[in-house]
Length: 79
Image 1 (cartoon, rainbow, N blue to C red):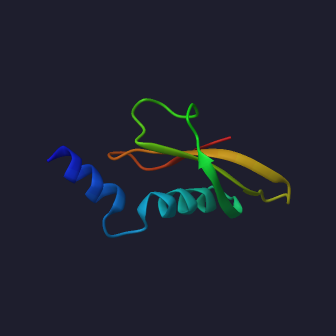
Image 2: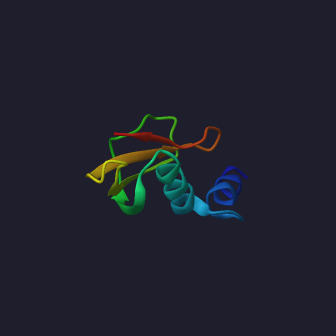
């Protein structure tokens, strides 16, 4: 049951994990975000998944960030 619930949350209807990560990155001001891969050590134990993203900030500088998402909480962006 727990595995089915987890799969429904992560892969069910909606944007999915990668879509959530890209939406969070864009909402924080990262233009044209691209997922670079998993972020193994960038988030807390409560986070379900985390990705490294790259893009451009509002000043036009290339940046990288970590986006951390949980089942119960929304995504947060860490620079």
